Length: 213
Image (tube, rainbow, N blue to C red):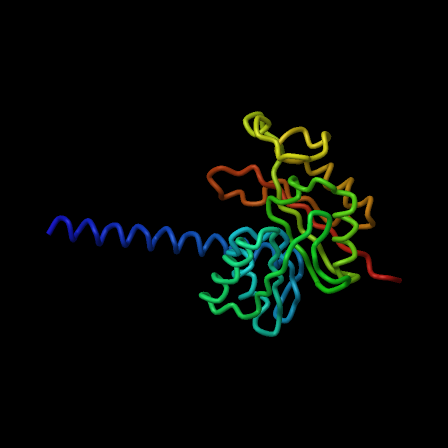
């Protein structure tokens, strides 16, 4: 009897953890959509999509009339994202191969792009940012969510990153400087991306590709 009760408790605990993770991803997608101005029918790119949970959450926002491109460098990661999207019935998620110096997507192909804790890993920011600019349609928006370097993270800097990063992470002002250098317009900086998180060092920076006059 006690064993069965323990089993039930474990199942409930796992379910609660899964529900919390889903809720977190959905909340993140809603925040991103608000900053990008993404609604049903939009085309959005998740660059460096990780396990795909945020891309799948975003797919609910843009709906079946919209598209979410989820990019990753490694084939194994792309296969995992595709499997998760298929399991979730997210047929509007399209998985693409990322590139070290670009998005891997056609020019002017998306309404908005977001990168979550990815930008500080970029080893060649100048060509990468140039390609971000080219990938977004005029008038479209870019959101970079990242974190500032901390002393304990400086012990584990990503390989090959520029020296001006200051370790593992990047400061918002440097993000703004690099993106403006490629032609982006700085819209706003969010100092605390998720103020309700128990441990939060993330910020958000919103940019826009100016539309021609």
